[in-house]
Length: 450
Image 1 (cartoon, rainbow, N blue to C red):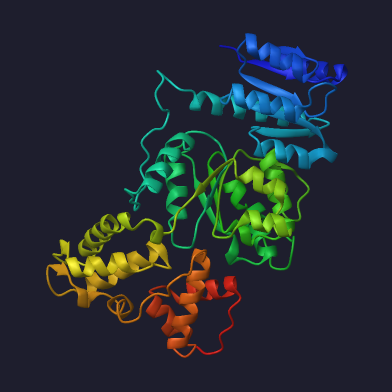
Image 2 (tube, rainbow, N blue to C red; image 1 turned 180 degrees about the horizontal axis):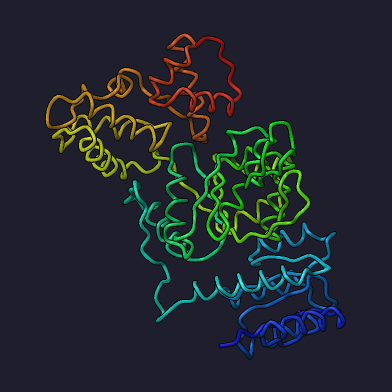
């Protein structure tokens, strides 16, 4: 069936221009000159999509949007705003708008956003009154806790769409595995999944990696090179640790998300790409938006579907299953007949706070499998830090203490025990030295000895 669009704009000339282009693209268009008329039309008829101007005389865009999202939560609404009102449009996205366009509207961009919105609506449309969540395979991931069950259900909803996904969680919680699952269960699964760690490169190198460069663009650019966006065309681009990206690069990423276009470094030709972006970070992007180190408009572009990965310490019920999974994996790799973990060893594993999360647990079980001399992992096969849980208890929090403050306190306590030796402290905490250094920077802790 032909999609019918409700076009709401009190500027007759602008409304007519948009209607002609949409009709030429094959859409049916119904016009409304103000928000109150649009709401009345929605009460009587069904529409596939709403194109809603921000500023109108009687009922403005935000007020109309609030009413539409309440009465028609599955109906995609695209906001149209003047460039000077972008902050208001970002607020509209936070309130449920699918996307926004700035005036003067680029018709190619308009048709692209409309097509994407309609495709997402079709993929998310309920069938037979049942949930639209589909089974999602997450290789190397396990979870029976309530938090993980809800996360997997959400993945089943979002994976088949083209929605941008923002994965947030501490280091080691499995953000890359989630990105793999989203791509593998999407309609882009046969196209490439390209990955880039934004924290691993200097700003200039990062831009070259993202957008590519022309020959001679800078010293050492001996030939033309494609960037990650070009390589991911038709597929998915996973941007890990996007919170470490500079404001300059953030602005360029925003342009690609908005318009699907960019130029290589040193180039003048504008390139068009069709890329789904999945971003991940261990940082608090909302706090970064508040302090000005992360763009608000980019945050809302990325967080169309925000996914929060809980730390392992908040879901101890998942530990036995993860232990079984990793034991089988590393027993096979090391050609060992190990099929169990002793009750005492499992109790110690469940009693640990796992600052390095799933990655730390996996490393712990791999080590235990290698050291194990019997057919099951025993207490003595575990790292010394876990064996000494009772002898060196974790700091007891006072009411109101945050999890980050607890982690900071434990790091300080462990550093004190090791005389400030970061390598030994990382071993006792069961994490890598680099993870410890990252946490020291995050908490502003200075240690001199290695």
